[in-house]
Image (cartoon, rainbow, N blue to C red; front, side, top):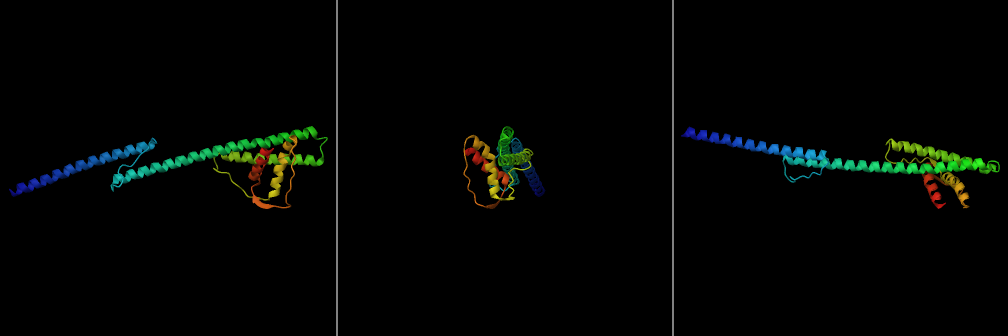
Length: 216
């Protein structure tokens, strides 16, 4: 009787362990299947959500980490999209700004061709300087456009190199002078003798010219 009892206990224990193993294995298979489904949803860019919040199990930890992975991927994707939009906007702005120096060059070249005999020496050199400024601005914009097109940078680089602020201002007036004369607009310019401020003459000059251009 004693041995039979022991045998029954051992048998019951083994059966219980077998049942627990089967149930535990089935649960693990279900959890791995859920993990696989979550992973597939992430790959297919479908929204996933953690349902085992607060549980301290391996599955809940994996589920939570996968949800965080999706949030990180989504954040980086949105950031990359914003960067692309910014680059496209900057490229469009630079392409639009290229028209201004091209129009200036065309205007002053025509001005030199049509009135070179009656033109004073001072006006001649003013026109030449305006052409040089437009050429330099066009070269700067082309270089910026190339950098943007190659995605080498995401924002405009400001290089504060020129301390003479009045030089930048005079260049802006020189570029708009021809258009103002065509519309019979006169400028009365009163500037101090000297203003020094480190700035980027290309971008600040472009901004100043745009203000004058809109005014004219």
